[in-house]
Image (cartoon, rainbow, N blue to C red):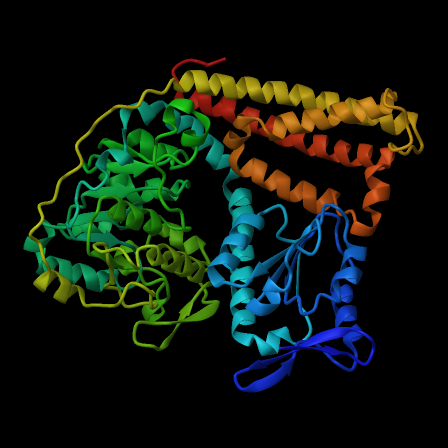
Length: 576
């Protein structure tokens, strides 16, 4: 490796890689590479997140620092270890240099990208890094795109289900102390084969094989989602556990003929409230919310949420210690041009557009139609399975005929049931109602929090309106400490911080997620170059917080009214 002076007075590294020499930027005009970087960041927002690939000699850093403001964060991934080590410290207060390792890249993306900043992320590959380190560059882009898609799906989920989430959560609280927590069954079925049933097109073929080996099914722990219960029962197959996580009423419709089953039903706070109310069997509680909001429930276990109920089913099978975990109907693609198995298709499906959007490799290496959503599920499943790649006992087998699932090699279900090891005895779920939850007290506290927050948003709106009416312009850095408008802004900030940091905001679910996304997207697009001026501009701050409190007041009122109506429907007497 050698540092070379460019024609325009900068320095660039020349390296030897794969028996060839490469310059990491243009030696004739290094300035062009810097200009390309600055052009990419021309509309940089005040809190933008910037990912760069390659630091080279660092000669572009002085120009980069000029366009940043204190709220910007820059992470530079450097794939050359020698170059990385040549920088003894991070290049700046808000610039972090990271040695490129794929697992490190994935971790940083997961921790730093969220629904508030998905539209506020910049990426730039400096100079010739994208060609010299093409493999690393392409993998980095793949992980970046995937993390943004995952975060964007949270916004979509919030918008679609925000109201039903609130209703289900409030209604389901009253049955939690009648349920058994999922952790009660940890490792209870170690070494017992599990069959995880999904509704993909190949399920019908898988069910025929299950019927053929019906005597073996009594030695397998069968876990299914709501969609496939009817298909199993009508073929004389009784599952050991039903898992229901979808919030919509269609989930109830899929199960309405089987509400008298004695099979345990696993649910979480947002599962469909009508299914939970009318299903007669035992309930198994999976906590995704209360374990973070109720001190006495901190010990409760959650399950892996990869977007579909099958992820939860598979994680439960692994929690039980089951192995092998056989995946059936887990096509994650439109096998035979079908979106679901015939036995797992309902009237609800006629309302959904299942047109293929993309292609995926199937178990035979051929291309098969799929969708962005199914591909998202597949990748999440592969990420989950990868956690067990070195596990000495738990293994996954794909007995479906759809998309290839890395980490779960395809094998015929007939072979697995015909020649598998069934020496371990299956242990059924027995109830243990060890949870105590005063649901009325929690809901009463939530309603009080909503009322108090609505009052405080009205206070905030009044203060913002006062500032807007009484002042044309004022700089907050030029006023005395006891200036009335400065004190008003400080109190406004206190209202915002006390609300956003309150533990009960977790109960607001999709409403809060959507609020954070939209308030940032619609009302806070301050450019980095304007940061110093606008953060001290009294009118700018008052106008922004006026929009903030207006939107917040609207959603809190809707949540309160929704909560009250749900209490009236599902509880014998009014809580407040």
